[in-house]
Image (tube, rainbow, N blue to C red):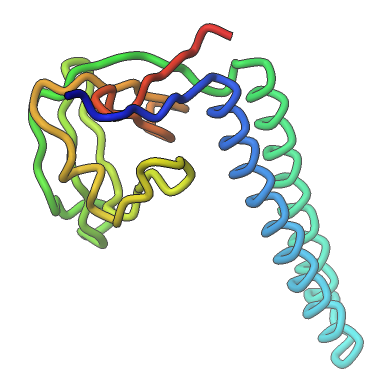
Amino acid sequence: MENKKEVVTLSAIKKYLMKLNFSSMIFIIIATTFVCLFFSAANLLFKTLILKIITVVALLIGLVFIADDIISMVKIRKNTYFQIRTDTLIDKKDHIWSGLRYSHAVNRLFFKYNTYDISPAYKYQWCDLYNMDKNAVFQTSFIGDSFTLVEHKKEIILLFNNRLFDVKIDS
């Protein structure tokens, strides 16, 4: 008896990526607002040119990040933000230390065409059937499993084990 598979469509992938970008944009707006308010208040007390410059620079940086999120959202709608492909898992290693000065542990998944470091925090939190704990993606993957990978700038942004998911990208 085969396990029931979660059906994933192109529209569901787009919706999830739009939600991530929108959340990022809201965070940037809130953070930029607080930083600008802080330096504006400090400028009222100390009246220095450097505080005015810091406020303007913080605002400009915030606007650049917001513009980037808006551009990403347009690209998601046009299917130019990400690439979807299928690959086969050929090896996996858990708790590889990665990052600057080995700052955090990741799970490394080796596919035929590339190797990816997957954060142990990565999970299928958005789907109905597989709300797994932080290591479940790694633990439920076996050598030889076929995956559908959603990539952006050669980084995994979503991955689906085809044993658990029926990915339908024709829409």
